[in-house]
Image (cartoon, rainbow, N blue to C red; front, side, top):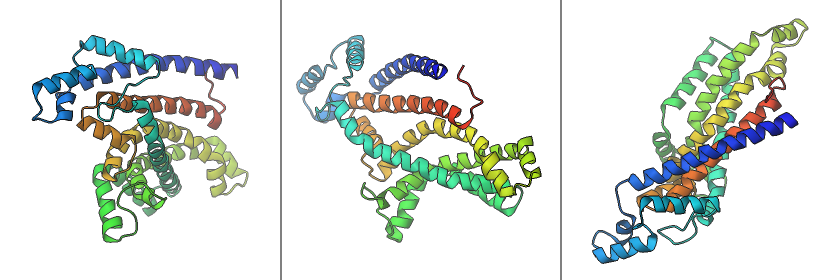
Length: 309
């Protein structure tokens, strides 16, 4: 227990400079992007005096270092500022969108795991057969097809042509199917290939051969002995790819009009809403770091041989 607590404390301390670096980088990049938020809010035909007045009210007329200092001071106090577009607190607006994004991300991860693990296991057990070839071809297709193409195709086929599922919006479970598959397809392909490679390695280990020699069936040796250990690198990849799922959610939420953080981020970028863009990206960064930490902890659950020291 003491080793685990020391590990957690060390990891938490290491996340502080990472998050500070992300906050600084986001602030710098968003202010270097061409475009004036005041001009975007008032329109191209706005009078220069009105634009200057709005810039002063938003604090955009102050030196960049002063704006950065105020941003970091508010961040230390848990205040992300107010949206330029709506005037509402950024944190409140983000919290309102978190459940939708969390629902979509978890559904995409679940869909990826449900698809990937059976495909990878089947490909490893029947290595070199038609099953193996078909599973890996499907995995390769999942990697090759980007979600900004797959999403519209799924919507056209299953929503517009067949009418089986809703084309957009957040409703019941049926509205979650197409966005989850679109977002989780690439991850499923990666996890399937990783499961196959890892399980093939485990099947060559002596403890699996010993289990077979003691009379265990092939299915029992795979499921009870080899599969658990083979999932350790799969868990690693799944945790590391969760950040990619959140990034892909930006596109998927836009395609399916899903009311989450990704769609809010795209809308905020188009309006040059600096505080909202900074808040959304910081949330994604914090989530990514948190998931990596949970992945490290899960190592010890799956394999007691791993020690945090």
